[in-house]
Length: 113
Length: 113
Image (tube, rainbow over all chains, first blue to last red; front, side, top):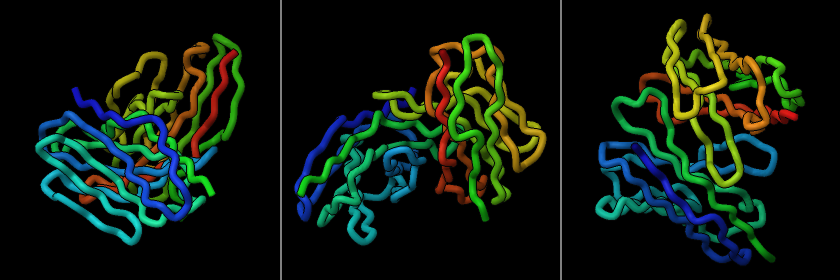
């Protein structure tokens, strides 16, 4: 079945760039998502990319996809204290699988002053 | 639109008790899902529905029942609560066509003693 893996923690200084990494195993056409979860809150969709794309940029967020290595990254430019949260990578097959999102374990991002 | 709403926000149960977690959405979304979030394990799919009258099992369905009598509502029932069901539960919905974005509710924190 599908598997999504992420590192558990990342600490950066305010103003630096953050890069959160994710690997996935699904070999079919798939959507890949990045969600943000602040303490005590639900999941907020940040951005998504389809598996036939290489890159997507949205303001401070850049998603890079290495299809060969099945490696996805989320770069946050000029990281702010408000970016401190847990970031989840998730994937959903284009066909089949119903409504199943497979999530990684989440990366806790800590932004220090 | 209120989006995806969940009640209650927090619940304490004793082992063996039953309860229903409520989920509603006002966006006319066909797809609805229930996930549970446990530390270090990301979110795991419990049950999902692709439309009124249709439900299917996800990754961790044991101990939970669902029904979908209307498009708007997707309740999750715990028939006999166990401590292993202590978790944070999230409901989510999306449209069937072009529904890349999945909307999450704020979550229900459940503690089973």
